[in-house]
Length: 119
Length: 278
Image (cartoon, rainbow over the protein chains, first blue to last red):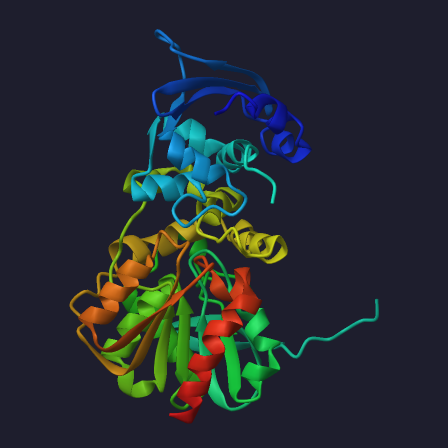
């Protein structure tokens, strides 16, 4: 689900610009599959697929495969167009250290949305 | 490109709100029935620029939008540097009525978005005799928080870029990027702590669920992509209030007049036509 995140995100100079002061590790969950993402100064330095044992991550965004598939479409349906929308409807769980996510919110939203298919 | 002037004219008015003097910026275009527009939290009157440049609106309506104190080009009160901004329901209503009085607006249609939509409910139910109608865009009768209140203690809310990122998902993916990003720019511009101060009204001081009868027509218009004020929430509000109706706007988000002005015309023009005829 998120294997292509490193190439997609790093290819977008605006994503890198938004995250230039952000260095963090976080987790994306698609169903039972966990993806650990490392960011250094706005660049994605690694995406690795679990399972993990005791892997550190500041926060995680978890949703079903079907929910992420909707999120990735060019014009997602209502409720699947934003990670906060998915949280609000219960389609996603956002947990962990919110200070990290919120501190670079525009960057993390753009980073995850970089996987969205082009119209 | 040849220079092109828009029909919008801006100026300032000095007035008292709850006994305190304020200097308020407003802009307007058109002639006819006053259409008093109320901006969203942490934003300003520019959100209504498309309505003011639409001859189909301005040929029958005098479209007027003012910046609340602390917003846009309106001043905060003297002594602002010794207090935190916090919007209350009483002050918000008093500011709107004071502005309408200062401009001697006769039976205006009030049109507010988000927190402006919320206060439109209060205006219709408590001050309906003063208005021809109230239109609540993305407005319900009570708070329905979609994020944790503890966030509000964060200093992040002082940052315009954070406020823009928080609300960005409330916009529709169908909106033209130029206008969606201009809508976010308004949040980017907001003064330090102003969005947070507006949230005091929106999240803790605007439970109007006890308001059950509108004294003027109350029309609640809601975009399907809005998860702050949902179509279901607006529909329930309309069901709770005698004299209210709800309209669902497809492919629209939380900022219809500024994020997708062309599509918004499809919904607002028939409403304005009906209110002008009535």
